[in-house]
Amino acid sequence: MIIQFNDIIKNAPHLPGVYKMYGADDVLLYVGKARDLSARLKQYSDIAKLEPHKQIMRSLVTRIEWETVPTENDALVLEEKLIKSDKPKYNIMLTDGKMYPQIMLTRHEFPRIMKFRGKVSQKRDVFGPYPSVGAMNESLKTIQKVCQLRTCTDGYMRNRTRPCLLYQIGRCSAPCMIKDNIAYSEQVALARRILSGDTAPVINDLSTQMTTAASNMDYEAAAKLRDKIAALSETAIAGKRNPQNKNFDWPTAFKSLETWLGLEIDKAFVFDNSHLFGKSPVGGMIAFDKNGLVKNEYKHFKLKDPSRAGNDIAMMEEFIARAFKDAAGGGLVIVDGGHAQWKAAKKILGDTAPVLGVVKGEVRNGDEHFILPDGTENFSVPKNSLLFLLLRRVRDEAHRFAITFNRARRSKEAFGSALDEIDGIGPTRKRALLHYFGGARGVSNADLKTLEKVPGLGAAAAKKIYSFFHPGLI
Image (cartoon, one colour):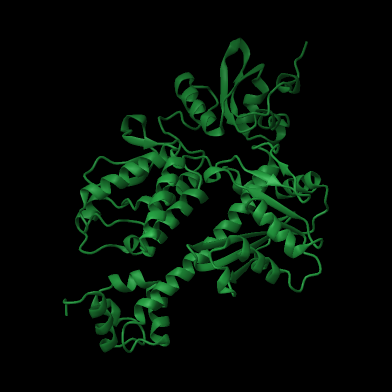
């Protein structure tokens, strides 16, 4: 009896795991990983669509084994292990001692954080592997934002005479110039915790520090801690971010949303607020439809009513009212928050648009639930479903959009307030400095010769600015 390939895979589960394909005499032909074993193995059904070497391999398959694991990242690790130990004939990647992309901390007085993709024998303090270079880069970017570890080579660090651009934009603590071993070691320890997936207690610790700084009226420190928390909340660490971002099936996910809600949706809008203890209060609205994000309909809001500053519910009421002031119907409105936010949106919109609430769990870690348009709560959306991923994705995009605007406002306000204290620096020169340096930090770190190069500033004004930030040096 000839065994059909579809019969071999018919019982494959819709779970993450590793599959092993065998040929005659139980020769192991191929090992692969999958986020969904059933869906992945079905891709082998149409042999004509496979790569040439896989077409040959597929024609030789007589049986398939699979092993399920908790996450796709676990599948990646197991796949790598099996390829190295069992050496399947048709696996081209990972048979030369190379590894999936990882992140490494070097052994140095001031450890360097860097991308790593070498042989196992070269392994030092390594974290990962990551399912893709993109996932690794996201984690590396987050560590730079939160921990400010250096990424430069040892030789480059030794020869620096002043901090580089990464220090000016808050991505490095400049150990080349500021040789604080204790502070840097603390940041390295923090990076290790984050890269090991220990983000929840890290965020709790940072939140406590932020609250303390704010109560002590140290708003600059509180703002930095707020940005660190945001970076950790926005980015999935240790390769946990869905690696299929570019191939996300928007039409199917959008249809799932319509079916779940029992609505026909032309367009959906997601709202979020951002402020730092009432400072620089802003809001953001993003839009999406069945084809994806509709970025030309994104909107930023500056709070008009100062009495609402710091009150998330009151701020949301103002922003939603302004967004739909001239609209007869608003489509689906999604708010980030619980019953209070949902009720605020419903109060403004009435029956003109259905409202859906996305209630986040602790540190946005995947235990979100939802408030439906009728006000009931729903906890039953599968965490690995397209619907759940869609709702989390658009919620995170709205959060990113709002908090980026908030940071820009804070930076501009801090920039303006600092330069307001310098006699003779008016709006035109402020704009020139902002354009040249990007913010107050770049101006404060600049030397006199660099300041003199700013178009329209002039030597006298440059000297005033330098003297203000470096008293006693001129």
